[in-house]
Length: 487
Image (cartoon, rainbow, N blue to C red; front, side, top):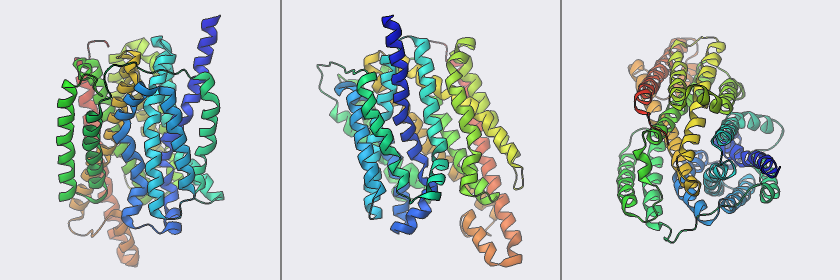
């Protein structure tokens, strides 16, 4: 009876943990629709617009490993509530920001708070669900909450902006944070690691000096193209990461336990997280432009077109543990990579005038693959370490997800752009949107230019889809042959 009560409390606690996960994911995408209104109200410069959008994810990506380890040390529930408090307070500040600079600072604080929430929630699951089967189901639900938040962010933003002012997209975080503060002390356990070794401050410094410049350089290349400062910053970040890894080999209490990578299963899962998010993030960016600029859907309609992907991803996440029990983790991950590859490669069939149902079917298929792989990756990574180190391990996996997204935007976005200009043969003086504006000014004589620009963009999207699909296919073969051991 006692274990049944504990089990019931754990599942209620999981429901509470999905609240901050949903919020963090939603705030990645909720600004997509709000940016035109914010730009009209605060008059940010083009660079400030980029920072408003990017500083949140930028700081989350750079701080995940540090915050995961810090939660292990000072208490996972404590850092969860502290991060949630910062996230809520920063959300209020963002809602009433009087200037673009103030909004950027508030979004940065939201990113710092968000970086504590993801590893804290995932590592608490390891404490609350010691049984492997229960933990796998719980992580599937956690993954579904994250996917759902990212998908419905633009839709919620569109509905709210239709009735209220732009600040409300931040204020919706406040009641959710308040509910977390009320419920967490009753249903979430506290857990911390008792360590005689001092916290690895040098490792923290080296990880930040490596990850933050590297992520910034990747985002800058994705937004503005290759430049000398971006390359220099990226190289500096890479050198700092090498020094970080060398330091981790000698540190008595390292932030990253490099011995974990001796496991083919663990290493394969980190690779799947990075490559999977690289393919999914890059294609989400390009297909969003395709739907709006090539096919003419408005932003809200394009966001709604993303719901089949979100629904299949969330459903597959919840069912991933059952699939793994049926066919084994290795076969399930191989199948998931193949399904994601089919969805990516299927985009080669899209053209300028293709019906929307083709896109919906292809992304739904890809969603099944991504849902299985993301849930199983998180489960394997958290389950591969003792519970006292699950915060650090989840920080590693979440960082690989974030870096994969950033690399997808930079690499596949750059590839698509290169193909676009190559197909233009000098006819395009700017981006697809700028070229279409130029064609509109020419009147009827600009129709050929507009069609050529749309066809060139589709060709670039095809090249990126082919590259992403091939990466997924190659990784599926590697996983099938290499991933033999068990954590």
